Image 1 (cartoon, rainbow, N blue to C red):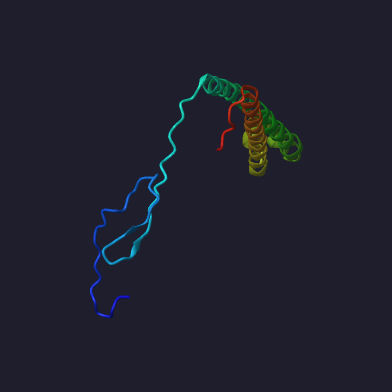
Image 2 (spheres, rainbow, N blue to C red):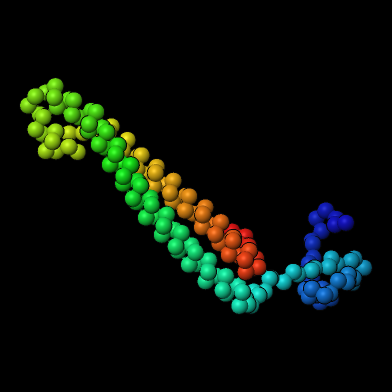
Length: 161
């Protein structure tokens, strides 16, 4: 115990070892036991073999092809969806309005996007983005499935991330 007002003293103990194999307790001059310090070494990077290297190459090309397919589908189907929504808003919103106002009917045909309502433009854009996002997510999930299949066939470890 330390008395009140007494100065505490910390000294170096040369008997403490930081090596992993050392698991002994040491005693200092006062007879107190010093705790054993066990240092766990960092994991050493394993040298990858032929299978692991082949697996990395196969996963890269699998990911590349699947995500390329997904991106093309996202662009194509997203654009078609947005164009379909715009055509619908034009046919069922802008065109009837043009017939009611006889003088603006020519403008409806000359400038269809300009005459379509803001709501129609926003909804068609959101629908196109939703379809595109769906195809990108589906492509990513398919990629994960295919890379796991490659790892399984080559009997390499699955990724942890």
